[in-house]
Image 1 (cartoon, rainbow, N blue to C red):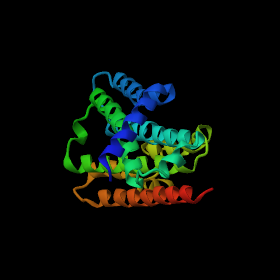
Image 2: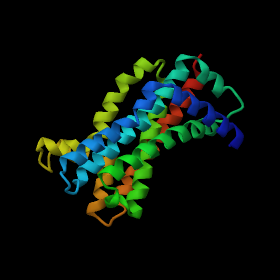
Image 3: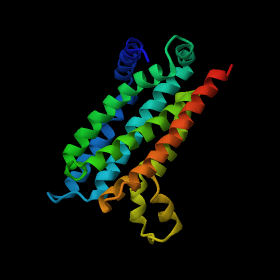
Length: 231
C-alpha cells in the first residue's frame, strides 16, 4: 500500500462526492428517518428494532448506495479502468475510495443515533458487530459498482440490497412466527445478527457476521479481477 496514492484517491473522490447532489442527499436520509422516529416516541425510549432499522438504512442508503454509484460513475466514464492500470494497487484504490464513504457513513450514523439514542449500542460486541456490518455493506457496494456499466444500472441492484439486507428487521412487523421459514432465514442476516448480540452473551452472532463479510469480500475481489480481464 502507498499512503500518497491512497490520499490522492481520497482527495479526488471527496471532491467528486461534494459535487454530486445525488450522493450528498444519501447521508441525509437516515437523519430524516431518525428525526421522524424520535417524534413518534413522544419522549419515550425508542424501541431497539427502530435503532437497528436506522443502522440498516444508514449502511444500505449511504455506504452501499454511495459506493456503488461512485464506482459505476467511474466505470461509465471509463476512468476506473485507467485507475486500475495505474501504479495504484488494488488495496490503494479500495482504501482510498472507502475512506470517503466511511467518513460520510460515520457522520450520518453518529448524527442519526444521537437523535434516537446511542446508549443501547455502547458496548464492545455491538461496536465490533457494527464495524463488521459496515464492511459487509461496503464490499457489496464495491462489488456491484465494479460490474455496473452505468449509474442507472445500480438502482436496479440497490433496492434489493436495501430491502433484503438494510430493512431486514422490518420482517418482525409482518406477524410471522419465529419458527417460520422466512424468519429462520432472516435471523441469519447481518442486521438481525447484530440485534441478536443484545439477547446473548455469546460471540456467535459476530462469527456469523464475519462469515458474511468474508463472503462479500470474495465477491468484491472476484468482481475486481473480472473487470481487470475484460476488454
